[in-house]
Image (cartoon, rainbow, N blue to C red; front, side, top):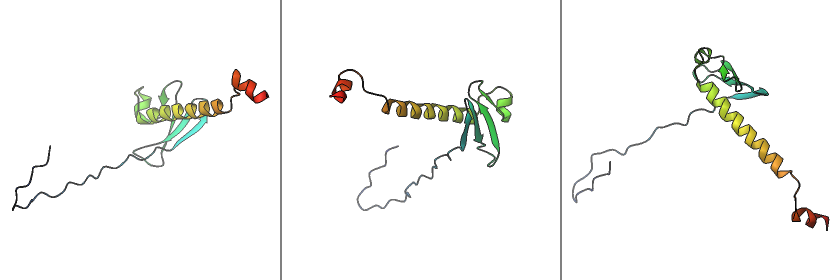
Amino acid sequence: MAPRAQQPGKTSTMAPQTSTTQQPAKPKIRYLGRTSYTVESRTRPGHIHHVDTYRLTCSCEAGRYGKRCWALVAALGYEDWRRRQQAQGAASTARPAGMAALQDVF
């Protein structure tokens, strides 16, 4: 909705709108090895869910019924980020090939 143009001599009675949107809290995710993670509950702080990203399972209430839950999605996103970071690290330490390798020799 576009704001209305104010006519000369009249004052506006509309208060400015303020946005109180908050960013969702970052989930506390811990990598246990291979495809296992622990994810802190979003609704019950301090409660931990165990997630397996290979089997797509979670120990939360929804996960026990085979439904995709928030903890599983968070663990999958973290796993994707972690694998990208590993790939970037491996690419930066790779040796140059072709002409670049010859330039390093001479």
